[in-house]
Image (cartoon, rainbow, N blue to C red; front, side, top):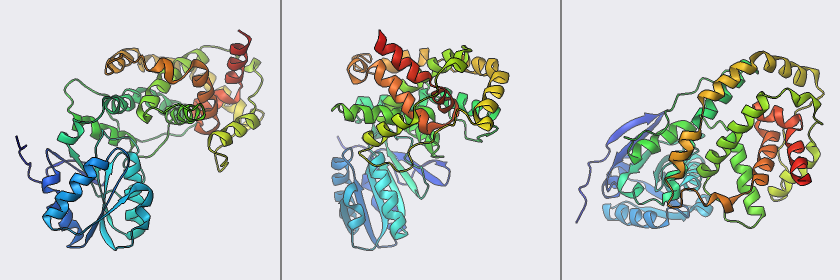
Length: 374
């Protein structure tokens, strides 16, 4: 039976300067909106591995409307020679990044059509005119992509803790929009919008960097990486437990400082031999660094422990695991406790904040040594 076509555009909200439209079977009426943006000009459609099938159906619908369309996969999008006035990205974060890059090169409008609940980097960097959330498409997304989106939202309490640390210890307040965690009444479009809001600033927190390290470690072991949001939440749970233990212990001064050179070598290896600007070594012997932060941290230690208690992720973890058919059993083969400790240690070289300070004190090196001795 043919789905009822919602008149387009059906404006849901705005995230920053980006308009968010929602409805069902939007591809049938998307042509009119894109035609108005392009002013009769050509539209460039790009996609990634997530969005190939939907991109094909959408392109056919746009051509059926009478639009001139150029098709390019995300890897080749900048090779399109035609002067396209609108770039439409169909898929996940890779399609979004390609579409934003192509639109910036051409001075064109960028429109995104996610096929999975949005990843938090979707709007990072700006230059997105509109996002079209087709509930009919999103409801067909793989189960792990739904869990990945929820994982990003369930990790938000730890982000707020790190904002408190930055404000109290580093005197770096972050005025960011508060985004609520998932609620029972949320539809799939509501979840997608919350995830977009959570990542609109483009700021990377410790769980984001740790998640990237987990992905690189998985690749180095020949494993298929999980989705970013999945890694983000398991990293947030591990970091919350680590922060609580670290802040409750006065033993940091007895540790041997971290080996930054070894960490740099491993980061270069995991990044495929590209060094770039991938290390932010915290000088443990710098009076204005370690001793200043250690003093201020001592003043606010109890406040931070109380803040962590309010960021309890245990209940969220149970809700999150139950989103999987195997109740999260996949994690037993996806990474080890050693992988997580190493990921946090490497993330500490670039993440800054409490994780960077803790990593510089050598706590992760000590944990790894203890693990090898057992």
